[in-house]
Image (tube, rainbow, N blue to C red):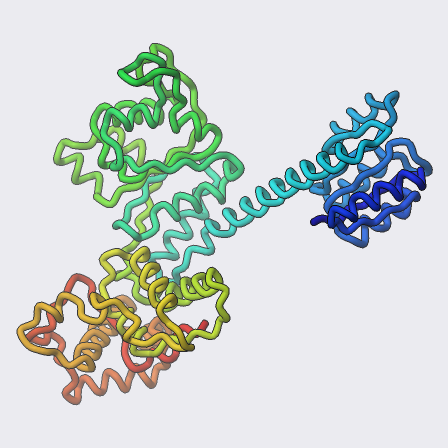
Length: 480
């Protein structure tokens, strides 16, 4: 039900309307004084205003303007005599939802009010959705403090509000579409459509029609004209995921779009102008496809005006604790649970040493799983999937491996990698690792005293970029 303000200088009508709407469950404030109505609008949030048109000292149009100034989403219904219909129409031009002619029919008023409130709800939902999208895809909300991710952020910030074509590289699950959406929602095109299409999901013939549209009779089943996705994205951005999967015919058409800013629907002899920013992505290097003869070199140069590389998660392990906390907070909020869930250090250690072939998307799914399975206040090793607890390098081993030795070996490899990145600067390495300098020195001293060898032979087999963390995980333990 809604908060409704009724304003009319006819006391009898005012009481009839108040009683009728209160009986419908609405919270009703009724007044014959338009100046009092302004005070109510200023102090209380009203969902709807029902007001007479002819009043003094303020008339209905003045009250409408005052109401819209304070809350432009308030639903306003005008009550007018037959001879003032033109004025009522003017009120609608100024933002009133509808008008009702005296004598007022209660059923008509109730129906009009219901429609006005439903429309107001849609307006609020639309505003809320736009705010949510802007917040969700704002580049500063993409989680990551690593140097590689900071480079991504800087590029997004520099090129978001331009019309330059962007080519995003990254493995599956790294967040290429998230970067594309961040580019769109931080640009002047943010209020226009963002259209995403997977170029690998459709065969060539269907993809061409999907992108550029077709005319009636262009092929069997084309019973009417159809607008393509480039037209649907008019004024906005189109995201072409897995662009490397396209054939030469589609590539030629895309080159025309980028050069001439026009498309030709399938079966048509006429070209149509389009105003669309193109953002493309690939999980393969297009230079290799050019050498293989499967991708046009001229299209490549048109697409790669601004290249952005999104690193795999295994190359930015320092971001894992931040991502874990981010996903845990979101999952707890979705389930309406209190933010008191703790993750044991052993669990975080396993998340840090796992290689994440599915990248951030895989981590997100794992966090969703463990939050769903956790019943108490802690996340334990038992909540992790088996492929993380026993990765292939362990499962393929010829004999059992001590978990502590495995974690220590991974920790050492990770720390040595950080030291190489910092040129041996131990103070900077300690900051990146999230530990104090004394702890780093203790770990390095332990290696000299017979810790795990640098190139351990035996059952622990590495996959590319393996790294990890150890007993100092408490300093970055996610606690939500």
